[in-house]
Length: 484
Image 1: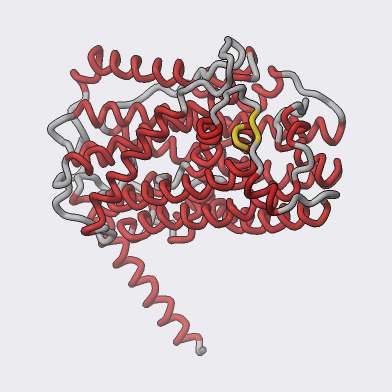
Image 2: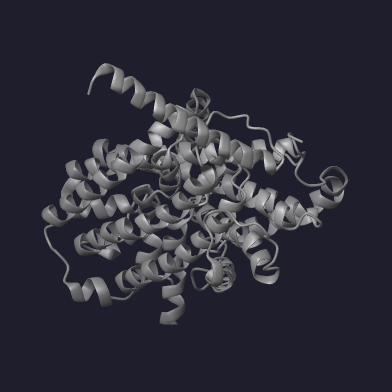
């Protein structure tokens, strides 16, 4: 191609991109907001944000023991596929709304726009989703610390104290803030890199586990074996308790909406990223899970581990100390990127709330100190994060179910006649999960094994309610337009 032709081609592409930016900015202005962020994210970058927030390698590794001890392989396999299907329906529901309202603030803004005459719903959703993001961020930061602690245990035989682990979690939170100050391009590039890292990492982990494991489990074990370390006698209930692993892992698809004001043609790219991230995660997660199940040597050994996080014991038993370190490095780096992405989504949400006079309080570092008192706090934080996010998902979906005409002008991504059935199925699953995840996970129940998620989530709902009557109802009137 001649130099003049190349210049003409580049000029044409720049003109087309400028046109796309103008169209997207106009849609944002129609919603009442002035464009204040540079639109530098492509589809791959936005998809990477959601994919990174979901964190297949990280979420599954961090919560794998939940399903392994509650139902075992049979519960993990069927739980993963059942939950993935319903999370895909939720993604479709959220994507339809996202296409209509492509602006940061996500769930909060959608509720405000669909029910503008009921500001309490928007306020409640904003604060609930904010705290859900805080819980998710805490679990991510603590997971980074636990993986690093496990690396020290496996590689050097050194056991970190809970205070040291909590300090690392704090440092990770600060590091995430520093990375997020660099700018959108840095986050977009990291998210793109994370997609390839997850794909490559899954391949490396699967091959390493399947080749090096001294004993390969049979298909009969992988697809039918039942395990129960909970104390409950009902097999069905035990399997359901293991759903936490799948739901916790798959949450985060809506993160694409938090960077909608930084993407070109956000009304198209953001919903595609929401749905695509779940579809891809479903498949990749299944590959990773099956490799873990075929390679696990002794479930009782994993249950009795002294390592900071149980997945380390599975790696150690299956591939030995040196390759276990490699496996932990792959997962740890993925967890670091997931934690940074969560900070990105949280900061955008807080910004959206701040410009509408509904700014929440960030208490993540304080909550993470609970781990100092008890290691049980980690599982409670996982449950609290999963439950809070599902409650947040439920807010806009409830409106779409009971007020189906709440959206008059849909965006390019529209479910049409399938909209109400998909939203109803999503709503039913959200209700089911929110009830399930606050039930006791072990029997008999005592202060050491109690599911403290009900305390955390219940207390959160009480605080939000009090805050609305004390302050919110007087200062919050809904989204504040920055463009008229």
